[in-house]
Image 1 (cartoon, rainbow, N blue to C red):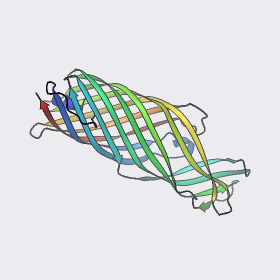
Image 2 (cartoon, rainbow, N blue to C red):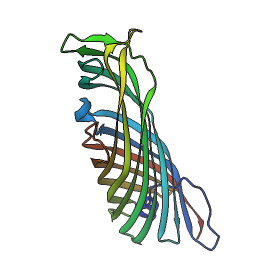
Image 3 (cartoon, rainbow, N blue to C red):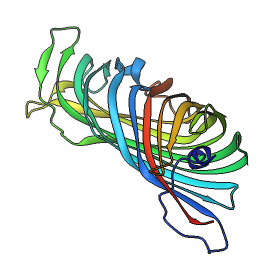
Image 4 (tube, rainbow, N blue to C red):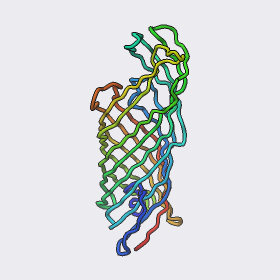
Length: 286
């Protein structure tokens, strides 16, 4: 029962204690996600799957009134990935048709969330959540072709980053299936809604500026997204050390719809990977 209780809500980042008359179970630990990402600009910019990338960070959970579980987590990326973005278009000021291939560095990834869960019984709970994520894309060197001519290498004039942030809401259900007294399998499914997401992409275009660099332009888009998140987790409770270890998998899919002009022609994104966490559990009041 303790295994299922600890994991019902994800993890709490705001530490507080209820009055002594209430039962409160607190879990403190670490969570991680080893994942692959198919970005929403994959088709537009010719970007292949990004990853694998490892995210890790603190995790806390709190159960109050025996029926309510609060939780949150915050993970930070530990690696950086390089990929090549491809784009082509017509540069109106110069009248040039251009094709560009630019190396990008994907890093500074963060992923976090808060959850409120209601425990219906030892096998079933429902939850609502708030999720946020962010990442940075750094420009590197690339090459460009003007009017179907040969490619020429260039050094990007601007070294600043392009940052994107994501905010979303979730509503779902978890089902706990006890295998043994210490081992529980937890299956989760939730709907995800992202009311607004802004994308910005800085591109290198022609022709050459007087300083020897190619021109730079920015394309932007604003989108809303709907999709789902599915998880399958095995949790094992080591009673002698009051610790729960979990190992599982996660898959998320989001379909986007343009709110304004669909400049980037974003379609959908998905990410999937392996989750692992370790949680120390203790009770303040019986």
